[in-house]
Length: 267
Image (tube, rainbow, N blue to C red; front, side, top):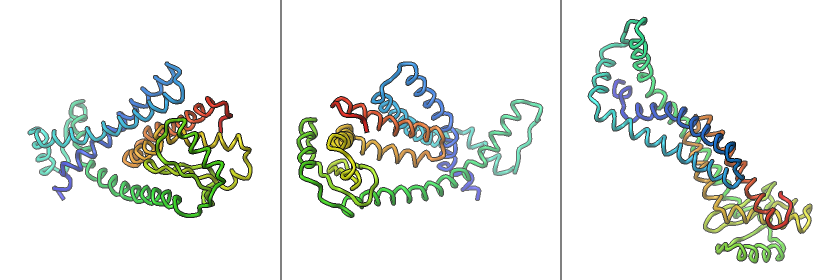
């Protein structure tokens, strides 16, 4: 039990979880300040939000590493662990401010391994859901597909070449989705719901496909995969969720703005 309580990895992870709250809060405030002060366009806000999210994740990992090194090298922390072995609770003068702070530190350090263990349990479940969602998305590449009219294949091929996209892009009608979707990075595939084919005019359909081509050109699929992974790791942090919402909103807004350059209405 004592080895569990004093596990360097669990202690360090616990510290990183707590530190991540103020770290991401600071990054969220910085993002909000920059976006408001400089009146950024959607494209730039999207990029800044992605950078902020990645920075928060790297900061979280560095915090874990920092505390592992600190606990390996610090004699002071080893002595504090010895005190925890010998005493269930260390009492200090409660009217002494330093004593209150030290009591609080001891209490927090005792619960960190349990906090980390709970985090890892929840993380395992969320990773399972994330993996299942990824597998379900990949399944759409092969199931419920119908061939699409050749005019849309030609439109994709010609427009992609005009935009400098060198990857081969496939396009199909899908019976399993309700809104257009792009899947894949190396071999992207655009899926269009049957309703879009039946209900949209030619110009509207072209705008929809341009929107999906924008995602491919901007490497949105790969970046979205990375940031969704980060969101799973930092699931406990509300500021991670706020930044993720901003990223997703500005990603779509940026693609709509891109479509407008071609004299189409945004979709």
